[in-house]
Amino acid sequence: MLFLFKTEEFWYKIFYRQMNFRHTSFTAKFFIFLAVLFFLIGTFFSIKKKNVKKQNELDSIFAEKISDLAEEKKLPEEPVQLEIFRKSYPDVSFESFYDEEKNDWLVKISAPIFPDKEEKKQTELWWADGRLLPEDELENKNEYWKLIYQYSKLKDPKEMNAEEIEEVRNFSSSKNRQTSQGTPMFFFDFLYAAKSKVIIEDHISYSTFLGKSTKIHERIKNPLLNVETRILNLAKEDPEIDGFIKNLKSADAYNWRVIEGTGGRKSFHSYGIAVDLIPKRLYGKAIFWSWTRDKDPKNWMLTPLEKRWMPPQKIIDIFEDEGFIWGGNWIIFDNMHFEYHPEILKGK
Ligand SMILES: [Zn+2]
Image (cartoon, rainbow, N blue to C red; front, side, top):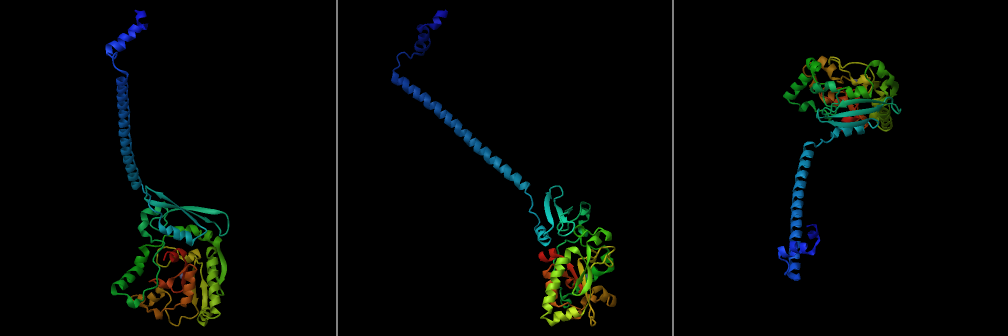
């Protein structure tokens, strides 16, 4: 039996006789071979084509899913106003991180402890629609104004209608001023080191402004010096400016105090970044809303502009140009008052 396996006869029986190929010509065999070959190649390509199609389908489904996910997770754009803060305070860094859970931006702020010194201090505040609040104040967000507000020229009281007049009356009532919204001071407390009188006084220095002695925060030393230089230059050729300087009684800035009738809110004089320019003579004109209110509680807001003491417009322009807003533009007018807020002016 074993022998049989190895004989030619065995293979002959298996292939040629049983499959009846014995008499098939070579050409026929060749064509059968080709047909089989084509069949195999065809099958191979059709499977491959199917696979490519399937792969394309999968790819497009995958791409769609990815873009859906990206859409869902699309990070909001950083608030535009943060850039205004960066431009307003070039030595301060503002780094923002979006927090999905809070749906708000955490702003990491770093500033020199003393201007022009290396050593830095850091804080983290939440953007809170332009309020810069600490985490535990986020729930009280609506008690605060936005830091950058619309600063524009005062509306002439002649153009105010009855409704607007009533609004000012309510806004300035002592009851409202106790409970109403206020400026969120957290960023300024950090920037000017205004946690307490003792701490901030390390940053307050004696200075002079237009010949009057004053105490200011070291951070406004340069902008205020720029204002003074420009006013003095202008006074050389402009008698109105010269007269303004000669009629100046005082230029008080730093004074640790709370805003009258607000239940403890600090004034920007407490930060040494607000200056009051008080003239020697007012010639019967109004200069501060609350002093006028004492005389005319009902209609103080209607005091015509020409009956209010005004610094020359050129002086106001110079202050604004150097980053100081003027209190004469507020409804509750404070015409002697200039306050350093480059972010409000750059955000106009
Ligand atoms: Zn003031």
